[in-house]
Amino acid sequence: MADDDFDVQGFARGINELLILSTLQEGAKHGYQIAIDVEEGSNGLFRFRHGTLYPILHRLEEAGHIRGSWSKEEGRRRKVYALTEKGERHLVGGSDRVDVILHRLLGMLRGPGEVLP
Amino acid sequence: MADDDFDVQGFARGINELLILSTLQEGAKHGYQIAIDVEEGSNGLFRFRHGTLYPILHRLEEAGHIRGSWSKEEGRRRKVYALTEKGERHLVGGSDRVDVILHRLLGMLRGPGEVLP
DNA sequence: TGTCTTTATATCGTCACTCTATATATCATG
DNA sequence: CATGATATATAGAGTGACGATATAAAGACA
Image 1 (cartoon, rainbow over the protein chains, first blue to last red):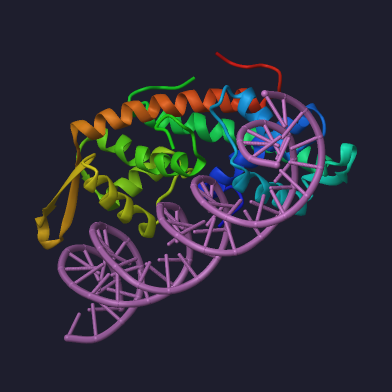
Image 2: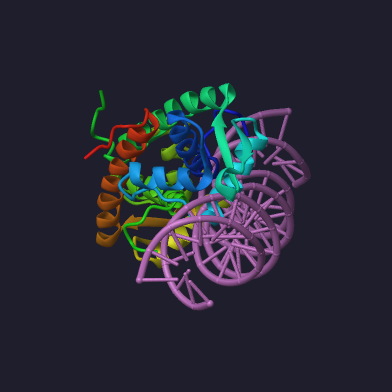
């Protein structure tokens, strides 16, 4: 499959990844905080179960989009993730792509008669 | 999971279903024609493999969103699908939902801080 | 006539991924 | 000291898109 091809699976996966990268723009944070911020930032619309969140974080770390480091403040172990440059580029490109795809989708759904700007 | 909850899997699955329902607004057609129309209508962005298309058509038929009937014109057997009223309602509701998610998602991705109405 | 491509529908197996549930550990509160 | 919130992790289940493959008939071409 070509790189600019659309597939729903990859698109869905991408949404979750982009949401995580997006909140990390505010600064480095640990997983639990990411989940909270995404949920609050979207008024509860977007939400991560921890069974969903952590695998994605590991995936993003392996891909070099985020960089994790353990901190042991107050005895509580936390893995704090920071956005890398690669991750930032991925976020910008991914957001543009989501923009294009969803607007085209909406154009299709609104019916064939309508002409979009 | 509540009905108005967002999950990426369901959203992704919904995209394909809505694309199919959308082209059927033009009138009843058979599966192969649906695939062609979706691909051409989106300038090649959205595309169905037949391994993807037919299971979705069966799913939509079972759900009562479309109604299929066999035709044997010219000796070639075709299953022609028509949009039902239920399917029409599903399409309208689904389009509105895509609209909402699109704007909220882009609001999140375009940078934190701002919470959209 | 034979065969190759296009049209047309269908299903099976694989793979990836979300989601539920469970495990582990620390800190705060009553 | 038990309960709940914080915090990370993984195993198991279920779903479904995707690729490959099967079937079959129509049209083109030599």
